Length: 289
Image 1 (tube, rainbow, N blue to C red):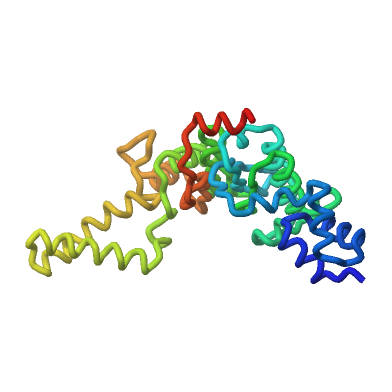
Image 2: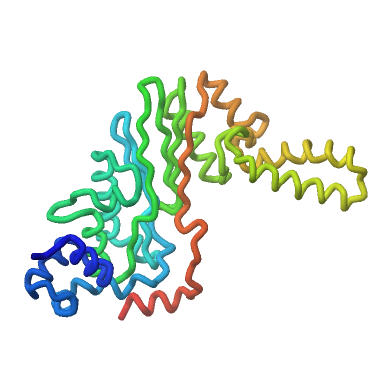
């Protein structure tokens, strides 16, 4: 009998899909070693060899249907593959599948049924076909209310994707705010969203700076508050001077259009990930082999 734990073990060792692992075990009477060879012979375990590669390129994309939206980042190893039709199909189909689901996290999303297998199986099969490590890094599924609007903006062909939810205003205003967020890289929507530990660390740094300038403690404390306002303008969407009218901040822009910002999802491909140091000529040469 082929047990679920046996299938799981083979999957972890080869990176092949659940269905392929089950077939391999059935074909080899449950022998893990023989099943690995079976998968290799079929070319299915090819994807496993790429597991330790760095995939920090790719696409960030958005799909909106009615009151539901999904934003995701799918990674590849090179920018060439991100422009590949096969890869773009993977992104598109994954977006559609997640949108119709109630997936809450990556594990849920990867295990969503797709054709004869799962989304993970689909990614593994595309990895084997394209010849690069591919991975779904993150996603968010968002549902808005009827009095809310989505604003979406894709920058540089999918290097940055921003999804904004506003209340009381229209999608054009929400899109303006999404474009602003793409350009100005805010981390949080409003001041209240900044975590306490981030705030305390910044206060400590700013106070040290003031003290090092020879200011007495009481003066330094006052200077910290002034400099914190500058810090908020750098990291909080609402506090940033609006790119289309620097005389007002983004919060005022929304308010002037009878609205307010509810949420922001900003994905920049590869942010926070280690990237390969490789020159363009080498990349071209690899693609031509």
